Length: 525
Image (cartoon, rainbow, N blue to C red; front, side):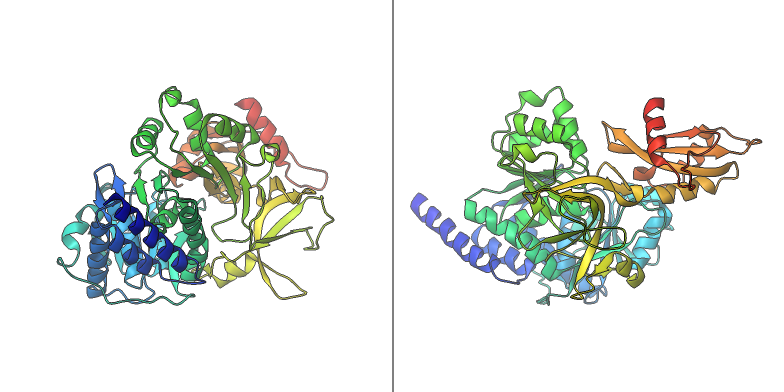
């Protein structure tokens, strides 16, 4: 029997490898193929339980059937709002199975932003958990078909229901990921079926080729593009995914030890918290084979500490949700390149341009632009913003993405980031745009002028700090102004401090010197 089981595993691995190696395929079809070989294997786990591959596919089919019965049209979004869980994952996968588009929404956004994102997505359905529904109140998007995530089991179609087959075309939308860190309505980044296939089919294929038993621990939210590496790719490889509703060091360590986790994705601030956790050394993490990191600056010092203290390989991924160049740094292979984000991955290209969009000499810093096989289709309903994000090569007409970073390339092709265009702040893995926070501060009657900078934070990686020139007859202090402004912002955007100053530091041509403000912020603590 053991010999027969090994042969069965070998045969399914060979078959699935052949399918994943194809230029394009159906994600849903791959999942259905896997269930035939392993119906009783655990597919998903969360804090409330688990489901096998057989149960997962059954529930996905029944949810997809019910979505279609209640009016979901091909290419239409399904909005999802709440903490990550098995029901959340099932709805995400069912939307795709039915020919719809998964549109997970950022839980930390303001009610106005959430309403704007939901409308922008064109969703007819909103799946929302009880906690978020209570927070937003009964009038929130009441014109939509709303389903509690805790109740999807009773909402789905009856047992045995199967949704009609949906065979995606390469350009069909797969999901919409809404950008974080803007006070306006976040832009919806549309990813196609082709993009996701190229992105995660290759990763799944590498797992199968290595013989790795994929047991993934997904501890970042399912509304984040970051999480897809730990969610979509492992399922394509026939693996098991544990979904954490909220990251907590002690629970993460317990899960990684108890599940014998082999694959995980963490943002830098999570790695830092694990390194600082007093119980870290008490856990056996020897099963870890591959760890990934993305979304925020990953310091050389922290990379080195993770490499020294956590088993398995460590790969830093540099890119954007929008796509563009994808750089990979196998930290365990290049310990002398920890100050870089690696080299462009196969299929990725990068150029370094000056402010007039001319290529700079090798080794000189400039604005990074890139392209790859995993670029967004565009921003939902925003062709103007899509165009702004692109650079068109004047010689070839090829489309490249502006990465928003300033960097240079060394003689070996490794990319070093030296600054960020527009002073974007990345806090806890989420983008925060200072201009948005400055506009909110300047809405206050007591504020004449405002500026926001990011400073290093052990807890969040970076945190926004504001400076304001207040009116002489201001009725409120800087702290009181900050409270009022933070009440209008999403949780990930809120200012950690606001300092009153007499005037803004400027250059002789009137340019605001944010470098001086950052230094003041560091001194003020």
